[in-house]
Length: 228
Image (cartoon, rainbow, N blue to C red; front, side, top):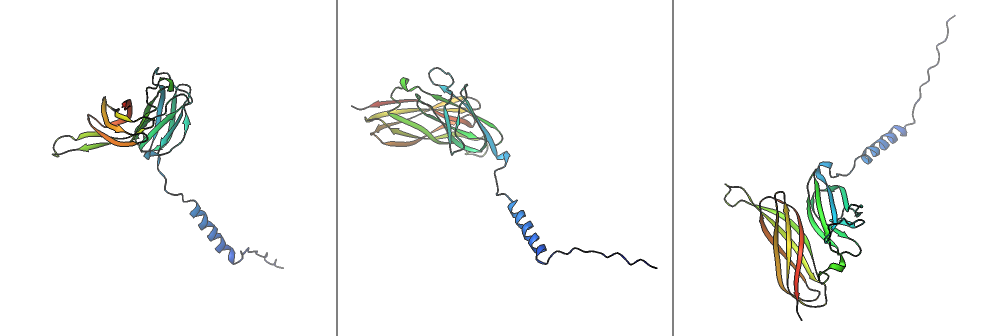
């Protein structure tokens, strides 16, 4: 007597389920696609030190910000700060601290390289009228020129600045010293103008021939005369 074959069971999904699974999988694939981001090779690191302009002592717990904005951080006990993963480009770095005048420097962050910035803060008690005239570097860049296409390029550092009479008396004349740091040396350039009324803003620029590309640009001494 032969044994009847065992029944075979086949599991079938309801009709709509395979289509639903395809929809879910497709949505998951779309969610897994991120927007285009800046790769690590297109970023650099910004490091620096904030010092007392009169004593060269480190200024701890100074607030450091950048423009365009990246992040706001505080300096450590040695006056050091670091901002990692900064997109390459030009930035203005500003340090502020109570009992000190705020100060800004301009830097060029390069891909895959650390960029060092030193910011000197002047104590408010030691200020010599800088509370009446404020000035900042708003932008700077390296301009390469080759007029005859045979010799090496000439490099000019173009620095743009903004000065404002923030006091309560008219300024008859003022002079700004711009410090340009290159890989080879440091050069100075002066900007000057006459007659700045109370609250008036002056926007200008200086252009200086340099031996190699500028790395950092800062404002040095500020001199001005007031009118009676």
